[in-house]
Length: 365
Image (cartoon, rainbow, N blue to C red):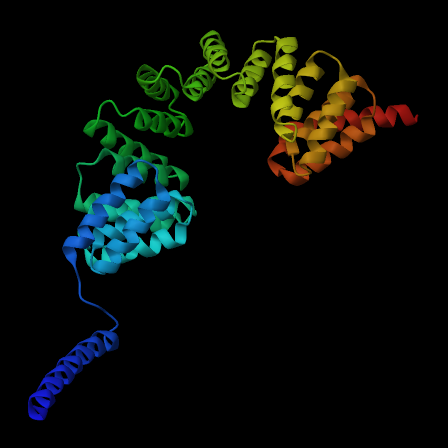
């Protein structure tokens, strides 16, 4: 009897020893048994919750998926996207690094990390990721569109246009790519192509105030002012708080000599953005043309207070004082300061400086 019990306890001890050895092995190796089936189950559940914007529950599921299988690249990818959605960019990038380490041939992983780098202005890293994504998969319009955006941020507008064009060739109904190409063409001063691009963007989304404003700006730059004003009108109709549309329409009214309407638009723009030196300078210019020099000088003063390096505001304040004969000495000081800030202005101001000095010399006599 005692022998039987001893053998029974011996078997129990041997079993416990095996369990402890196995547990110790996993502990020493920093891992535990993988369960890919359970991991994928929680991954799918997390994706479903992510798509429903149930972010807390989705995070729990992705964590469990990774806990069950630390080699689940897709789980890291999905959790990385979730971190980015929650603006925890560095954690998102860390997860995407893991996903790429586990599966370096998945274009979507590089695209997601490139997008994350855009949000923290690490543009060179973003460009490298989009290059890799496109090398792996040249069928996704979104990849070309995002790389085009990076080129535009880097002011490489020709390459930006090429990428947007590739995106449009893949998806001829890609609204965002048309708009982005329109902005790139605007920066290249190819206004006719810009108008065509914004027209296509408007065709796909007639309710976007920004597109009408951008098309109006392109029309204004080819001196089609009636078309420009019509686009600004519609931009403001769609969005009464579109500050840029008021500014651009104000400039266009100034270009056609409607300075009262120009002032009205700049008034509204200042209501929307009271710390913008450009608007005060523009309204001051309109007041100058209405010969309301006191209001003009007041606006130029504010523009300079907001931006002490605003060369054009010094130029304009100089002319307001000069044309009104309010303060010729101040005109000279303003023009000298403008030239100090922008030496290219010297040629344009040379004649007026000579006239101002002549008036002062005459006055002293």
